[in-house]
Amino acid sequence: MLTTPDPRMCGVCFTPLEARFDGLGLWTPVYTHPEREPWDHDPKPVPVDDRVIRTCDFCEHTPGATAFLTRKAIVGLTPTGETEIWAEPWSACAICAKHIRSRAVHLLMDRAVAMARHPETGGPLDRPTRRVLRREHIKPLFMKFFAAEPSEVSGEKGYLK
Image (cartoon, rainbow, N blue to C red; front, side, top):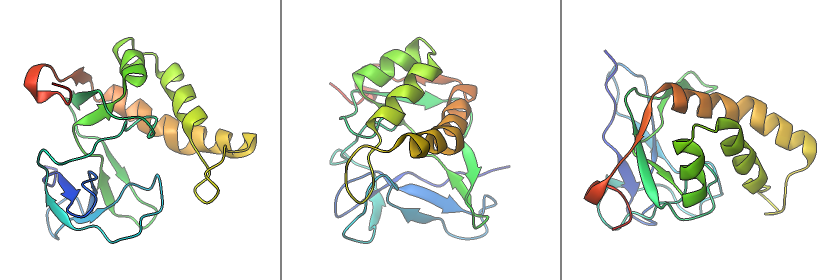
C-alpha cells in the first residue's frame, strides 16, 4: 500500500512544498518548492499551519479561494524515477474552481496555459512551448486530478473564511 508523506510548507516563505519519495516508505521524503518559479532559498520543511500562503494550483498566479480534496492519491514518476505525490488539498482560485465544479477540464487547461509565464523572462510563452506544456505536463496532471474524484472542501476547512 502506498503511504503518503505528511503535507509540509516552507518555514521561510510559507509556500506548500511538494514531496518526492520512493512510495514504499523506505526512505524519508524529499520536500521541494513547486517548479513554477525560481526560488532564492532551499526549502525548510515544517508542518502546515495558518501562515501558509496558497496560490492556485491550476493557474499558479492568483490567490487560492477554495480547496479541493481527491478520493484517490495523485502519483507520478519524476524523470529520475522518484515517486511524486501532489499535495492535498488542491488550492483553486475562483475562476479555476468554477471550471472544476463544472468538470470543464479543457477550460481549466486553457486557463493554465494562458497564465503560464517564461521562467526566466516572466513573459508569455511562445505557441510551440505552450503546446508542449499543455500536452506533456498540464493535461496528464489535470486528467489525473479529475480521475481522482475531486470534491470541494466546505466550511472552516476551506481556505477562505
